[in-house]
Image (tube, rainbow, N blue to C red; front, top):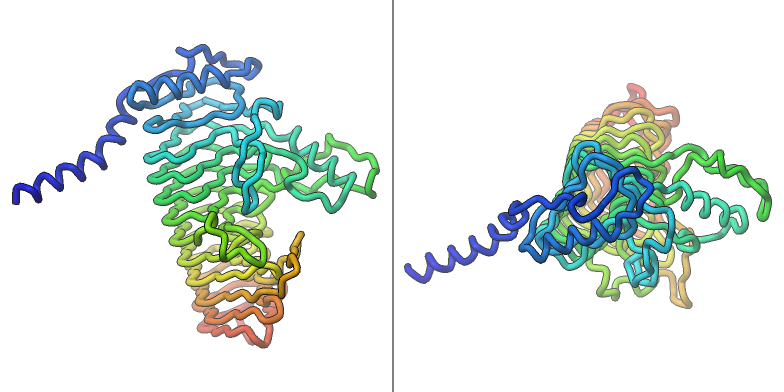
Length: 433
């Protein structure tokens, strides 16, 4: 019995100590020389505050009210980053302030720019507060659209653009309350993280029309830019046990994307474990290319629940990208309780052929199975489509208790797709496939 009590005490110590350390002390970035106003680069001062707090046994680094310009920052063990009311951590627009490093981007690793806020191999990560992370992204968007004007087939990675936050291989993560805006690229990128809660944050990026490009090499008016390219809200890359709760997202790309890697040998890539056990609940998705998108690079995604969310105009609810060059498995996906306001489609499940490369291999096969969509109300442009590449399997799709209005009442379904409808009304009439 005595040994048993000691064992419990030791476990309790492991769990409690990091949290107590984080609460130990506040460290204002002002005390380390950070200057408000948005003109002075404060990277060194803020990083010094983080390093000092870590060396002091942990604590909370506070960004007070005011605008503080910074380049790439790296969190340390036991240090919480807190953005107070009225605080703005403003990203520098000089790429030199984001020194290149080998980082995870679009399903692989290469020398690229870090994010404004970075964390790696940490436990108990806390990023909190009502303040704002402002990516100051327009110069990066301008550079991308300029390159697109020169070459319509340019890839996302041809023009380097910093993300707002990148967390790699972290455990016990809580991100709460902050506002992410105008990121140069993706907003929040989680890679190989476990036990993550993202709660009550707001993510915004302009999502108007891209600048009009008459032809390759033609001039265009950068002043007209009101769309942030590749402005994904939250990218869940090779992570497990992730909860996204009570968030508001309005961006020009996927609201929430579940990612892995790509290519004919993707299943053998040990750097991309399955995305598993993801819950998206009570979120307000106002603009984007998908409520929950699997892809553009993804292998195994399973056990995903989207519950009690509001979906705005132009957003597809279930978006599954099926690459012709990648073996993919998307399974056990439940969408329950959607209120739609002119959403784009109920389903956007189809081949995704952007920049695909079979690398000399035979086309692989993908599977979509056990997808349930239920308790959906509101209005849609169309019901969308459910189809894969030749040889792909789509089975176990269930539509249940759906009562919606739709401009286009057709659901495009391949003959090989297995779908069952139960109490599904479209414009007041039972859906006929």
